Length: 278
Image (cartoon, rainbow, N blue to C red; front, side, top):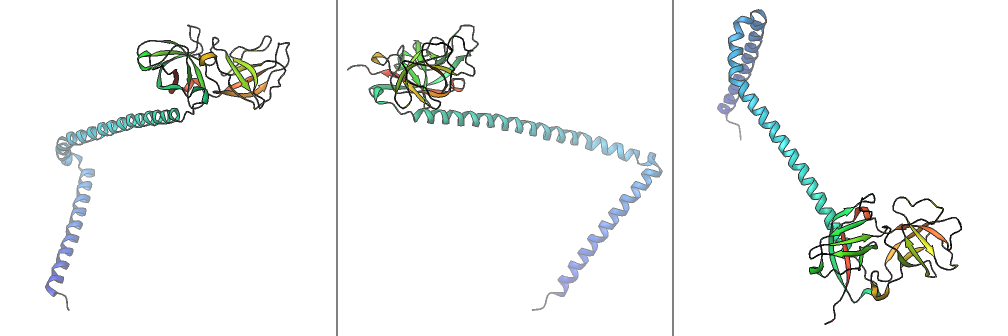
């Protein structure tokens, strides 16, 4: 089939008209530029009128666009922070949910809680402690084990109806009976360095062996357990031996223990409460 000759001529005429209009606009623009260069006074009224009409519109559009962009960026930053907080909270709760309760605590109740306040190592009250959002109404009891998925956190010091305070592993008032090494030798862990040795740095603890059992780098240290499981149940991870102290005349061999739990980044924890008898 042949195309419509009339239609082809019409399209050509429209195309030719557009080309002419473009050339005319270019010529007019060039002419105005030449006039503006040669006789600025002639085009001043046009420039002033254009500025009067378009300047407020441009300013309003510019201001609206910048404000809108700033608001969008601020909202994006807020949402990013909220997402990070929710992700950290979810990960902490998932870790808390992965706690494997040792046989010594199978009859205990696991009370999940979140850390709502903490006192730093340099606190004027002289203790390293945390406040959790679970108290006596939730079943938290005095002098009970506090832990997370990594290991031992500390012990409950006091309770109120809606919150509790716990002393952290690494506080001078927390001394834990432990077993260590492949032979499950007996010892104790505290925050105090042996006499004649410098204070521990970076949250490190001191393992003091009982008897002649050797201490070796890499030994795993776990809780021995307290009578009636108060304050500590048995077989909770405490940390790992990372260095053995030189013999400085101490009664037993001592070593540096890296805690399994970083108490400076605590979030979700679990309290092991004694199940009440029916």
